[in-house]
Amino acid sequence: MDYQWFVLYTTSRAEKKVATRLRERGLEVYLPMIEEIRQWSDRKKKVQKALFNGYVFVKTTKPNLWEALQVPGAVKFVNFSGEHATVRQQEIDTIHRILETGVAVETDGSEIEKGEQVKILGGPLQGMEGECVNKGNSDFFIIRIPGINQNLLISIERKFLQVIQEIRK
Image (cartoon, rainbow, N blue to C red):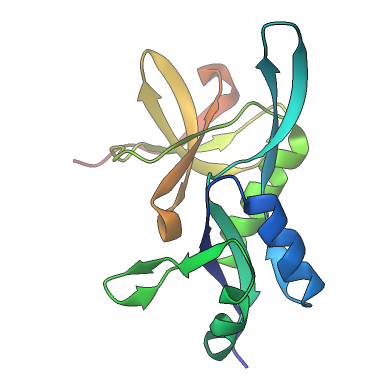
């Protein structure tokens, strides 16, 4: 059996419930969560929210996709050109490592030009290799997640980066 991480689209703000229901059915699920401070008129509160709105990663086989769709709140598996979108284990591990460090991270679904290949020299992400892009006068370490057309952007100072490969145009 070939287990892969498939991308399940959920109804609005139902990611946590869907993930819980899938786990109850014995499926392996990854729901990356971030903490943010929400401001109401009378108070501030830390809340947990999904890093990628509307997406849950499910590790299963193609024949078992139907089972995951039976969970209330599950809408469909993401497809590109008729193929189910998948995310590599390496990308799941990278997302997990970044979130474990607690660094500020944002998501961006826009088309971002290729950046320089870099290695992070210091800080909580030391040793990670990836891409660095300049956006709005700031440098960002970028993790591309093609399976959902999303990018993770981590603001990082240039002094913590070593260029491995220049941009080739």
